[in-house]
Image (cartoon, rainbow, N blue to C red):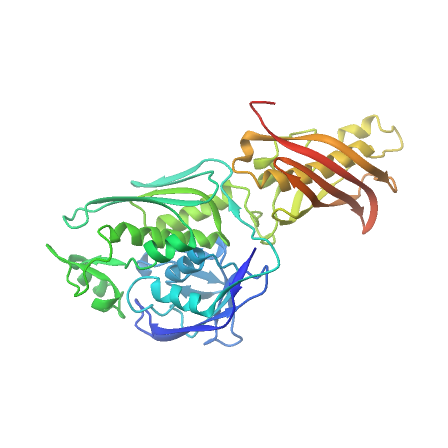
Length: 436
């Protein structure tokens, strides 16, 4: 189920790069709200949603991720989003009193995670909408490599390569659960090479930086009083950053992501590449965030012309229900013979379109939908209330009634202008393409 916090929480601190003092308040939010930042220091308290289209990387703004919506910016929120994703929080209102999120005092996500856990994490009344990696995706640029493949959970693998004897090559691969995150990822601190500090200062960055806010790596030793928390703390912090940047997708990711020599800029580019490549909600340019366009539909459904009968998905509750549309035009090939001079959409194709919506609901729940097909097993109680003709827009609503293994039973309804035109109970099974 979706989760939020039970009570408000607060962190005070200084922005790592701007040096400005700030207050960050975490507040519970309702289901479907997602994670939003609110600039309470600006007139009207404008919101910035955590969405791929709002992600921004400015090479002139230092080593940080930026969210920007309608000209309003939030800087350096990656540790916050990492804690939110790692703990498994879906809905949260985050009020900040400055442009840059205040630093959690030690360069890690542990203070943020502790504050959220102290507030209490509670289940809500709707299921989580996971963002699934449904097929292999890769991106690379100037030696930076990122890829994602289907996986039943969230797994992150990272390789770093530094020309420094205290860091060198480090590799780590972890399945991310709240327990793993809190114990093995959240405490890992950000780091900087001593030789880079002056360059960063001259560029106007790290104005709020202190020795306690990062691991400072000297020529032959770590300069901090506190020793490394893990022998491979450097790569663990990179996984922390990657998890936070991936949450910019707008929710929890199901997949195995591998990164090599990457940083915030590569992560942001990869997130945008994932949005354009995978059937993720809100992929249609300018469309609502819960919507799937036809390209996203075709990533999952194997159907093609003239038998792809779903144009858009407007909402999906994972494991529960789905709604979608079919625009009926005179150009449909079946109107040539059904019937000349009196075009009527065949009832069996209305049921087929309804079933394709149901297929999207079920195929989206399996690990690798591209290797699966949805087969009809039965149709019960089919009824047709009125003809469907060119110019109509069919709205389908499918609700899952029963699920046993890979076999499902759904109730389907089709509407035109709010009037029920067809209904049926559909039984289907998910099968492997190779065995079909």
